[in-house]
Length: 193
Image (cartoon, rainbow, N blue to C red; front, side, top):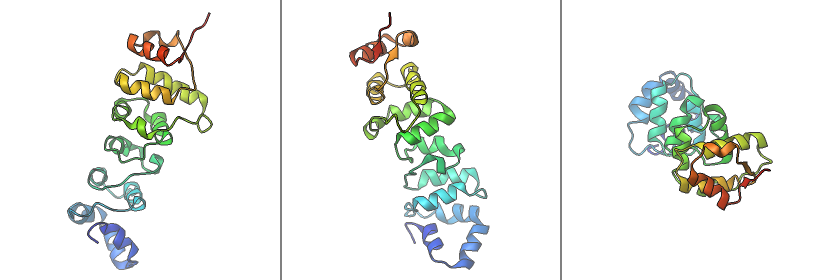
């Protein structure tokens, strides 16, 4: 009850209590859920339910994200207005599916750049091009090349994970000398006649 208060209440099957809490969900979150110092272990299923509950104020959803210990397996199960905070706090499983789902909605922004600068490449396996369209991965790779917010040391590791592709010199003419050298060193530039 102290570590997963809401999960315990839901599992209790005490309909009167559950209905009362659900009718007063914001008050419950503010006065109970977030006030219990040890209440950090709500299940992923419960977190998903809470973050999708339209009756819960967005500020309370953000506080849940900030206070609970959890990892969301699939980012698309959460409303996209909460994705930035989830990624900032590393509350989403690091996977190509989640990264490319986020990228499709928000592009390669400072949130993703910071995520890549946080050594997440260690958790990413080489991308399986069968799982995603080649066009989507090409656009993503090209944006990584041009994204100066990603530090070169992490850029090299990321680009190697996406290494199934060769990048055309014409496209990368606007990138830094260091990035071009990294691409040449790793044989990722295709020289055209």
